[in-house]
Length: 365
Image (cartoon, rainbow, N blue to C red; front, side):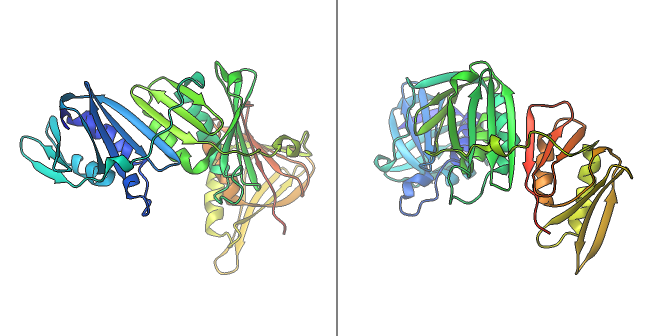
């Protein structure tokens, strides 16, 4: 193999690919990026068996060939180059990288051991806005379970309702739901994307300027745009019917400024105990909305917030970390908090925003 290509384009492609490489000691080739030169195209492939990526870039190819090179080494080295063009050449089983001022040899591995990346072309395929997909996933993914004991809970659940794609995640203590209107949404069906794959999926999609082609099978989902093909395993499971736990009404309703809440939670963090317990006291007659935390070793704090309050008085406890996570998904300046007794969950939304809903279960005193 011998090729010449633009350094900036190669660095960007290698950077994206390197993040997908695996750290599997029993299969060292997973730590590699596979470089395949054919025709006028250089194809880069990387996989960790859960995720796979394939990127094509233009190159001047003198000699076709394939080589597998450790991704981290290649990425770190290319990042130091300041030359406009770079030459890659297979030399005695290794990769020789040459510029006007530098010659480097990087040891390679047997490329024949590199696993195949699933190609989903020809299956169920939709064209969606990358920005909409990113918005939906980012709004909920922090609510999924980190443990893999229940794969369906350590996933992002995506399903369709007419012209709306609905993104949901829960760890059984809190739940986030985001509704995003999309053309072709009704063809999505339903699927579960492992949350551990989400950071890489978001990072790759964020470089997509417009629409992304999304394909589905029973076991895989893929995203294709501008020479980039990314595929992820999907979870074979059933997401719980979460809608049955969402209260249909409320007994206490609070509207307050989002930024005031965020500031109050920052103070509460300083004085919280090891259980992150936050006490919420609401008294509509006294127009009182109070958040308090207490730590026997540090001290205690109580913060009163201006709010519009209606309904019954209530005293209830939550894990404050579960509540603060949702503010990143609320676009409105004001937030509504709905309570339905001390044993029922809190529902948080942005004012006049029906697209996002966040549910938090209370904790015992």
